[in-house]
Length: 265
Image (cartoon, rainbow, N blue to C red; front, side, top):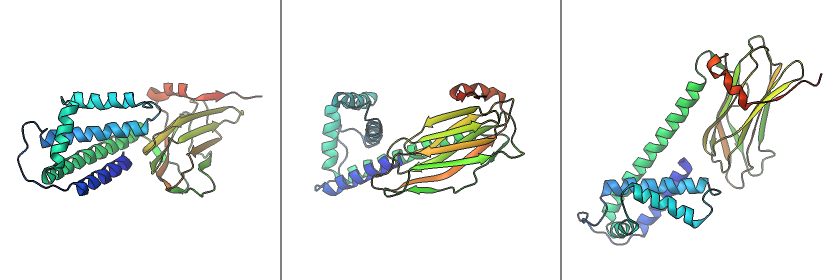
């Protein structure tokens, strides 16, 4: 969402510079009040970011209009009232700047709240007896001219592994354009395999979790991340973690998400 916030900030800044008439006056009754207008504009921005992030679901103009109308309906505002208010604010720059500042504050608060929820969810999913088993670089940069858009690793077994250990691969994407895929695989000494793949968020934290068999210990854990090669700006990957958590019976049923390949012996 931060990327769209920057775009929205730039668009509003351009709009401010384009306004030529400045007038200091009280808001007329037919104009949406500043606080309500800021909240409405913030929701309009959020709706636009949803459309941009889900073009396949909002492929037609009619669907986009329905989403916009739902925002107006939520605020009890008609399209005419919104357009009229925008025209008035466009001719009263000082009032528009106040609305602009409030809108940015609302959006920034939402971004911060979203980030805190993501971090809290990640922390709650791996609390307890856990360690970070990641042995490699914490930060990566994928460039348009880079050799690959795949990161892979192999983690060999050590004496601290226990049956039923869960492994959570997590990383934060900055500047991503398409959802990336994360995967984890457990190899067992009889040749059997368990694996799970997850397509994560375009921006922000993405994670995938694999829960090993409670009756045996893998001989190796494999993992990978694959993203679409960036066309222009670099794609940054920050704060890579591989958290190992001991067996948690309450979550063991989540193994149904994993695929299994039995031994050929």
